[in-house]
Amino acid sequence: MIGMLRGTVWEIQAERLVLEVQGVGYLLTVPNGLLAKAVPGQKLVLYTHVVRREDDIALYGFTSLGEKQLFLEMLSVSGIGPKAAISLLSTFGAAQIENAIVSENLNLLTKVPGVGKKIAQRLILELKEKFKGLALASEETAIAADLNPSQHSDALQTLLALGFGLEEARRALTHAGKDGGELTTEEQVKKALRLLAGG
Picture 1 (cartoon, one colour):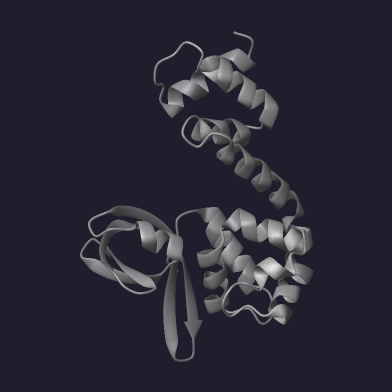
Picture 2: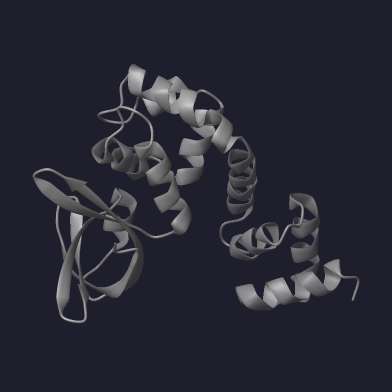
């Protein structure tokens, strides 16, 4: 089983890209968001999943373990195939899909090509309980990312991942940036952690 590939984008096709890894080209179906950003010559690390069928073997690629895990969770739902799962990930981000399932947002889910009302209902029925905690965390992260995308959203997401609350992380980063000057994400996080520790 191929779990991860690190290589260089060789070619971009309609729904897939070819990743060259040590002289071998792997053809991967990936979400549209990745296709839109990828350029030939770009180095990528992709988390992968192989789907075997009687007449075909397909390789799917994702930029994060969370995205891959969501894909696998959707495949576990009866009636959901890889085409519908990748279509969902191509239309919405992982956090938005999880929140739509938890909030039972049928209208949002059925906007995706190939996802009808019955499929959306199955996703909600079988995955809602699994995603409840995840959706709350991803919603908080999404809010953080939207607060000030031009400044410290990456640093804020890092602090949230470390277990700090949204408000305390925001306050710490605001104080950390009061000295002026451009700080890297790493510098912002270090200064904020010192402030949060009372140092």
